[in-house]
Image (cartoon, rainbow, N blue to C red; front, side, top):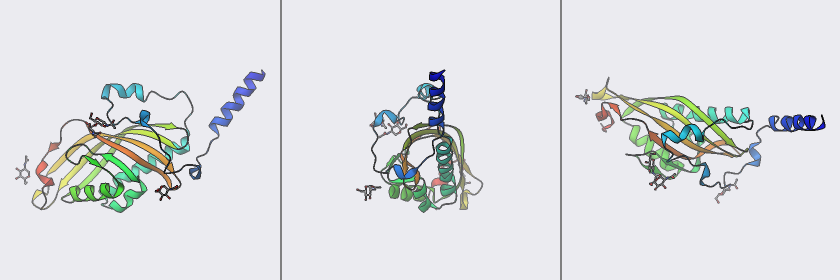
Length: 198
Ligand SMILES: *[C@@H]1O[C@H](CO)[C@@H](O)[C@H](O)[C@H]1NC(C)=O
Ligand SMILES: *[C@@H]1O[C@H](CO)[C@@H](O)[C@H](O)[C@H]1NC(C)=O
Ligand SMILES: *[C@@H]1O[C@H](CO)[C@@H](O)[C@H](O)[C@H]1NC(C)=O
Ligand SMILES: *[C@@H]1O[C@H](CO)[C@@H](O)[C@H](O)[C@H]1NC(C)=O
């Protein structure tokens, strides 16, 4: 009976846990076991097998809401607000042709320039999030990026399919992506000429 009571107490302690971002530092370093940048598609189901331990729903909601800001920034062409999504020192491998972007300002500049010729709609889909304690997490999120041509390309479309593979850290300001890999799934479909600067 005693052990049953104490295990209930342990359960209560682990589930009543609220995220206190002030205890996390943007400069905390985490090593590569968390990285899923190069993981094969067939390894993902076991990597993201549901955790046996309880995950904090407040943190999960904060991470999902922060990730949802990404399409708002990109589609709204408010690249400055990507500072709400990525750390200043974020490294993002956007695969070819953009390749690895090595800071927030690099991400902002390169995405703004490469998407200047088009309007976009980014659709986030299937998603798994895994927390490591209260200051680090990783997530995998499917996307379809719809690109709409402008000017002489009005009415022309290009569709990209892939996954955002993100490593997150808790900072004093909230959750931010510190490492991203954009892994494409399948070819670009449609009229790639719409990306030509006009
Ligand atoms: C993180 O490191 C940078 C560069 O050394 C420093 O400017 C910043 O104040 C640090 N942030 C925290 C929360 O310690
Ligand atoms: C992914 O693989 C490339 C090529 O083998 C390697 O250079 C890179 O460091 C790897 N990236 C990660 C995040 O493991
Ligand atoms: C970038 O991501 C692509 C797609 O997952 C991978 O093939 C490539 O090796 C990565 N590059 C680096 C430097 O990690
Ligand atoms: C791309 O759009 C342009 C302008 O409408 C058109 O001339 C061209 O044939 C299209 N290319 C493809 C591959 O659909």
